[in-house]
Length: 248
Image (cartoon, rainbow, N blue to C red; front, side, top):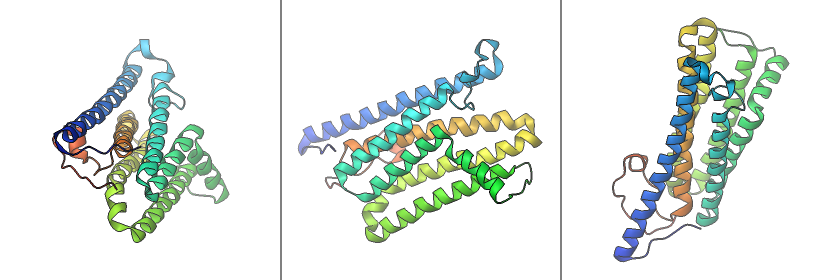
């Protein structure tokens, strides 16, 4: 259940404590991200870390299981936020990130991409294989479905939908840039420019780790506080946030 600060100085102190706890949660998540990113660099450069499970790119590796955990927390925090705030857009976001967790764990978009590539005879162009184009189609369908749900929620309740969704949407777009655009460039570079392939893979997977940490922290903020969600700048850098007594 979301926490509402009491009036007066005690309420202000409680709000400040909650904000510090949320930023500490983010710091701990990012420290974990940096550890796995360092292990990946060690995997590429040090024989002592030659095991594939140290790589960010390997399905079922250490970093991927860490990412699964954060995605689970993200979906659960948004479900708790929906229970406290009673706004259906939060339930839609929870379902979306729950789907992303299943997609990552079961490799759904890869399997669908292979099926679409074979079923419709998709071309191989500029280093992209038919299954890569199939994966892009799957990503387009998922993104379009999310935007359709957000558009419906915005049409029914514009102010609350925008207030609760804008930061989630910004971070999800950033996640899509890493997971779709940078991933596509990585595939092309793997065949056409191997010298930058490892760098692009690091940007893709490391970026996804950091962005999901931000998403999970923002979802925690939505779940435990009833007022205006923390701005991303204040979430990262700290500083006072105007107190909003109104629950979303």
